Image 1 (cartoon, rainbow, N blue to C red):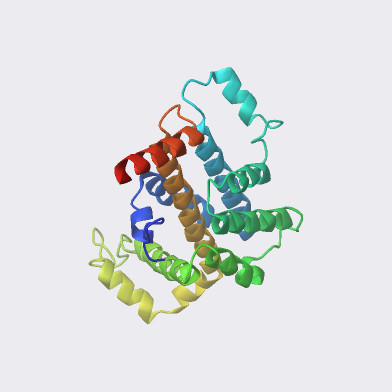
Image 2 (cartoon, helix red, strand yellow; image 1 turned 45 degrees about the vertical axis):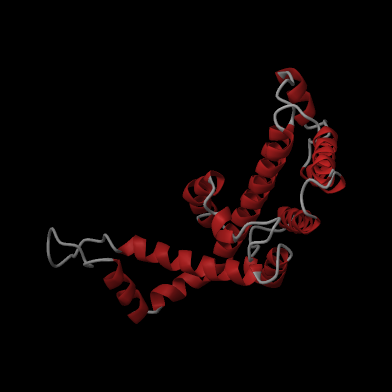
Length: 245
């Protein structure tokens, strides 16, 4: 995904604090889940990210009681789909992003009614189609980044192993030596292959979460702590008119 006037590059997105937290704390947990658990956990994270998105937009003067009412399960933002419908109707998030999240939500619903034997491999096309909605070639970028992270994780898991024949020494001199060993013994990577789709889901959802955070920051910058969107738009029109006068 290339940077545009309305959307940053992937590298810019992943530089944000939300992404740091996601890739440091949440991604490892997701990868260690079963395929079924990864989808359920990922959908829950998207739901939480949307809650944070709308919670940040609530006027700063709103009381704690009123805020709880708004986000109560019976309130307007009480469901995953409800938040997406509001984001779409009010044009707070791009339609393509909302559609991608909706499709992952539907995958979550399908998984919730499937047996424990659910496999992401059976849904490869659907997973990649979801990420393709975000932008041209995004699914390819997600696949590439997921592969890189999977290899890095494999290297990190063996680089500090002790040498059983030389007490006090490491088995590998550095990461390059560890990677070289893994490449020469491909059965290690073959064991990782069943987890590839889980890595893609994790990376793709990290991108979606970063995009939600990006749009949240832009909206907050436009309206401030208490101004409405109508007021912000009106002020912008006035400013443009004054500058053209």
